[in-house]
Length: 234
Length: 234
DNA sequence: CTTTTTGTTTGCGCCAGCGCAAAGACGAAA
DNA sequence: TTTCGTCTTTGCGCTGGCGCAAACAAAAAG
Image (cartoon, rainbow over all chains, first blue to last red; front, side, top):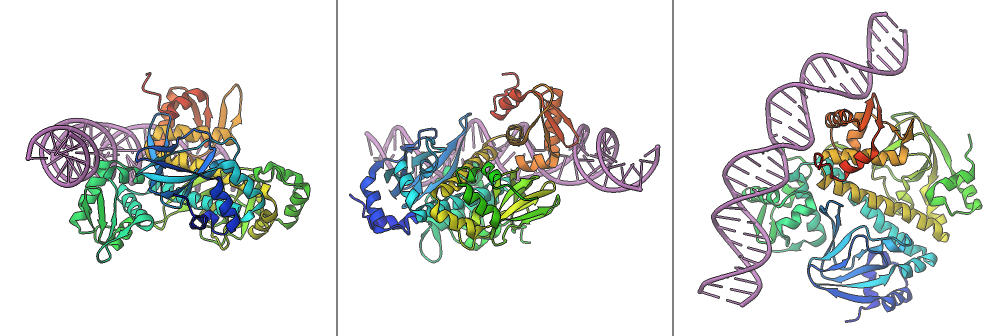
């Protein structure tokens, strides 16, 4: 089903675009639907299209020569990804985008956005803001990985996920749908360690766990842990 | 001593700027010289100026609430830093910039560059390219930290430093000037571990070390190590 | 229903790398 | 030269967190 141009306003980068520009974008866009586990693009492919996720969920990940993977971030609805090609000619995607569930995205030619930005500074600023956001997030995550203990990192990962995609259930509990494996990748550890830590927290009634489920009962305690202030009842 | 506008071309972002624009920038710039160990700005300060390092060397670092530090990158001559404020109004610096040696930089008001970018798409693209470069580097470093062993990370850090600031000496050896502590911060480990690893490599004649000096004799061996292919004579 | 697949938990062994301490080496200054 | 401060090395003990294996649990498929 066709996308309403107005909906594109939900994409931060296009917040201040004119109605006409949005219409242009939608006209030039191709809709691509893929199944869970399939790929929008692979690391190393020429970055000819940029994508806007309109339904579903995807992840960006990076692989080293030795074949080891890390998750860079999770993409939710109305988020832009793969936009690098609009900046640098002949760029290749620095990461792989894989659908976490059946997903649909709008694909727009990178060169088209590039052209539009030539005459629309607002668009450039929008994209730059998106980029500075990434830079800051990556810097923060890098610092966390370098200086913090696993427990802190898992806590932080959970809090970040709550902010972007938590679903409020009864009371002030919030529920997340994630496998231990995914959580491990996000927080840079192993599924075993995640499982052990979550079991610990469950004993302390900070969370409730289930298959592919984490329900957060005491967010404040998680914040304490994330900031390294949980000096054993200090 | 005054900066020649033409020299600003050495800054990637200004590569394609007109002579007039460069002149404008220099006119609006303030020269700031600081001593080793002093600061251009602190994390959390309002990002009112952006800087171009014209001599010396500086580092960008980030501190967590708990006071732990990481180095984000080293800034060399003719590199732009602290440019975030030109993108987002009322932004604050997400990192602290400290001089590694006596350094001089041009300070330009963020709002001024912001204004210029309104009418000069080339400038925006230049800045975006800088940003995508950072994003990619941070992503790569994050992956390395998450998946690679210390030895690999130290090797990688050395190779990166060689590329940006290595000084060629006799033969094809390259020399770097860094304390073990700095190398440790860059590669996300401790000065002890760096020392041990370098001693190892010295025994294998891959490097020669001295006080604040690392001379790389066999870069190729380092590349092997960095890529995790040094399976004990595999 | 049964079987298969996918996800989770937990025990156990192990080791890379950290932290400390103490000694050594180098460079600068006097 | 000696002194002083900074940087480096190395031994030693310790532990956080990884990796494997095996059992268990829940969902999906048949």
